[in-house]
Amino acid sequence: MPEEIINRVAQSALITFDLEELYPEGKRASIDIKDWLYEGLILREKEFRKSVTDYDWAQYDNAFVALNCSTDAIVPGWAYMLIASKVAPHAKRVIHGSLETLETLVYQEVLNTFDFSIFEGKPVIIKGCSNKPVPQNAYLLATAKIQGVAKSVMYGEACSAVPIYKRR
Image (cartoon, rainbow, N blue to C red; front, side, top):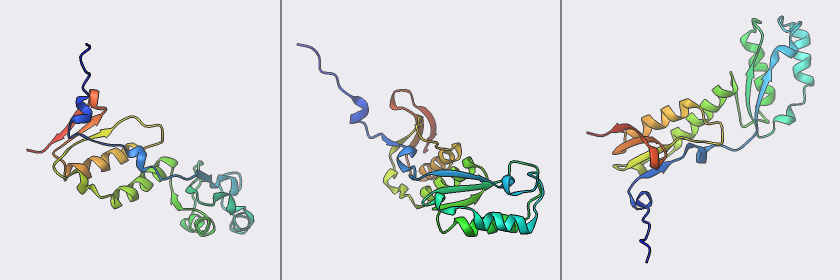
């Protein structure tokens, strides 16, 4: 009779924390305002305001939106504020910056409301592989928060975890 295979990982107290499971669903969009600038560099207020007013903001319904300018234009702060005032009623979140910055801020909000007490005194592994765009900063923030309560923190998969922290 063959020997029974025992899954020691399933029997251990190890808890896997997968940041991908906390990924807020919704479209991500980047708005590059260079298209509303004269030659991509100069903000002409009257034309800029008209472009912003005439734009179809409904396409950002329930989206996470990052506002930026890909040229070296000097853009006054009010320009981003004006755009944000138009897109905010449609979007879930609007920020100034890149899509990576957007993801970082979205994860920061999620992790700041997560109850990490479930990891109190337990060994935790933060899952490393992800199919969704989990930013590196999300791993850093999760590590700091889990470290405050867990017995130990590891990174990766149970079969090949890298030790990060162990409470003394």
